[in-house]
Amino acid sequence: MEITVQWVETSWTKQSRGGEGAARRNAAPVGFAAPRMSSGFAHFVRMSETDGFEPSTGPRDLREVPVRLRDEGGRLRVLARVEPLFGLPPRRRRPPAARLLPGQWVRWQLNYRFTSALGLRDWSYRLDTFNIAYGHVDRDVFLSEPTVFVDERGPVR
Image (cartoon, rainbow, N blue to C red; front, side):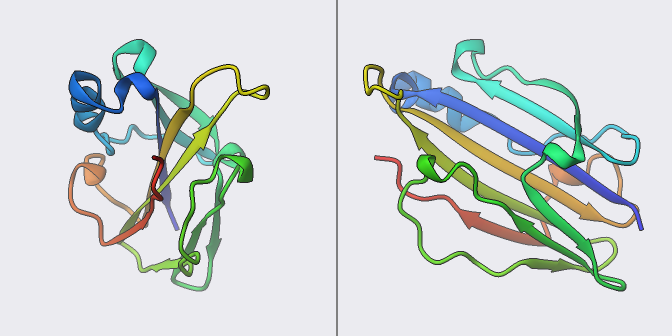
């Protein structure tokens, strides 16, 4: 069965936590039209504060995407991996895996907070959005409302 994976990575610093920077960051899309990818590849979209949250895209080997995908006889089991642990804000207990039927898709969001190794720089932040569809879907499927939405964003202070 066909699986379409899109990973949207948005990163910023304290400068985009309020005012105009936050408005630009919050206006950044969390889903894009998905180009056809070869099997084993995901559509990777990176947006960062340093580039004015302009998207840059390209293929990414599916093994590099921090999600676990398993076909379970007509259903796709999806579970986002939480990496790296040192970047986690406080979270509630992790939700169970999402199980998709053909034609369904999930949007899974996780956020992170980082500091430099010596604590000399300000905090930086990252939001990972995983859009994953099971079965044949239109290329603009990730521009619509997901069948399943998993929000694992924690407070980043």
